[in-house]
Image 1 (spheres, rainbow, N blue to C red):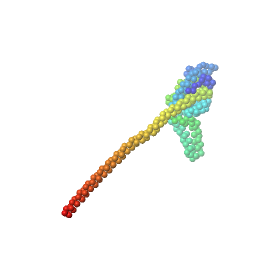
Image 2: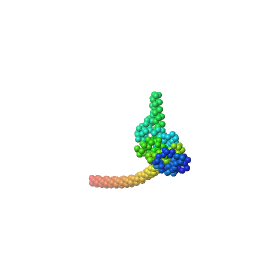
Image 3: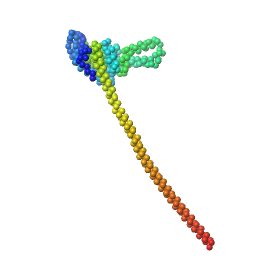
Image 4: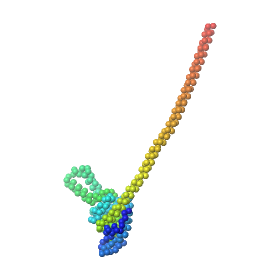
Length: 317
């Protein structure tokens, strides 16, 4: 977890609040003292709140959900856009489009309109239009890009909101409250910390203060995303191991088949030997029968010859 030191908060001017006459009594627990008519924020409590918010953001990012950053103040626009682009999260730095959360399907239609215009450029249909229509479409595309270009990848409602100024982003906070979306916010001494879920008492006017807090939140989100990647890789490894085991089993199976084939070949060989023996026996039997028949024929021929000789003798006598 990214930890912030007391010196870093002090150097960034996080401790400077608003004038005493502009204070909100709900911020009393986070005010350390008053000096020259200006309230000083207790940085020890700020550090605790930063750590608490960073842990919550890390868990949200680890779960694979999106966090929407909202900063429409002049001094916060560029800082938030630069830091949030690094972690690939949606952000709103221009005018907050009313109903962006409560009427999210309509906002999605506007984003789809922007993508359809891009398709017209790639398909070549844009070139077939008249000069006036081309001008209208390019202006429409530029306007959509300005207001909704940073949330083009937001396909569903965000899991949380991070707001730089609670007073300026009232509409966004009210919409999030209606949909029970948790809100993280930098809260100055003139703001009400009760309207947000994770208040961070800090100076929301100084650019250094905004940059420090946003950078810490972005680092926490990046850590959550990295942990998610590691978990995915770890879950993918056992699947590979099981695939290797299956391959080993598949390699072993043919050996079993060969054994079975050998075993199946053995009975066949025995059957062949048995058939050969049977054939030999049958041949021997046939030979015996032939011999017996020839012997019988020889005996009969001898008898016939003897009878013929006897008859000839009788005739001579």
